[in-house]
Image (cartoon, rainbow, N blue to C red; front, side, top):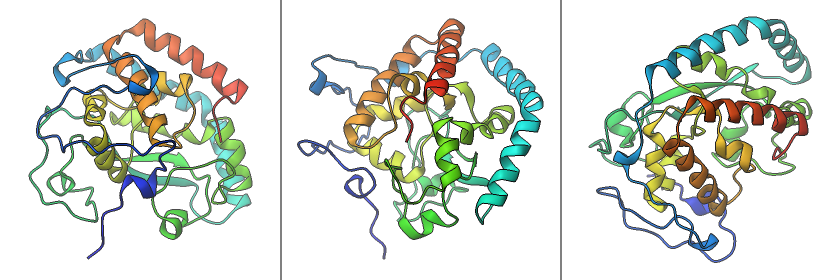
Length: 269
């Protein structure tokens, strides 16, 4: 029987080792920012409901962007095909919005997460397939396992480094927004393996599933890629701040800030 991969394998912990917390039977209010000296507490019921107007605007705007960007997307697709072997579009399972409340599935814990059976997942949130331009060598996850990308990651192709710096690899997720799996702005979706271990480590991590995941978000424009557990805690503060202050104006500010982050290549590997 395979042993489930822990955070020590998929996410290195910097500084003193993080203390384990009790498995959340119910959502426990914890201090997420002891290391920063400030506090951010939030319960599931504190999160506001997302208005339907936001979902409609997200889908309409994403569809328009896909049409306008179609020639550029085709150019990138050809470049990927010519530069390395493997599929142009990389598909991966992510955990999306939880519309069921804080109850978790009743299935037994397994070493392999069957994305088509939410009872097997035993996780809050709906699994979906995310689309990205492939930036790594073909079969990278099969060889190296589910680990976070790092600086000078040997799995990333030469063209992939450029696409990641410019965040172009995320553009196919406009399809996910049109399908209703994601929003333009929101917390970034994570893989089932990471979500389960992060909820065990940081119970309030589940609150970010209260809204649809986004292509960009407050955490993405304020912080760099995750490389350790402290990065996750920091970005979680921004995610909860976004959920608490959800508004069209905030979304607009984040989208404008995203353009600046892309142009300056801030926070990219």
